[in-house]
Image (tube, rainbow, N blue to C red):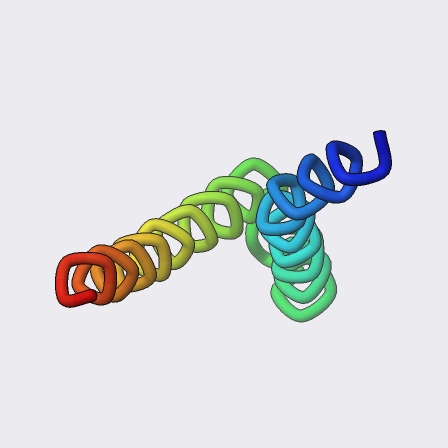
Length: 71
């Protein structure tokens, strides 16, 4: 039971970090750029964070599969 809970938490950790980054970027954009409309801020923060996470996932999976193929 404990092992499965830890495994689930490890799988959810990147998504929790992603949500935290989206919230942080939204907060910073809302507080620093008052002339932007709220829907633009949400689109900018979510879109930018998703692009960054896709890039990191691509690099991470590329490294993982290269190591897996050489061993």
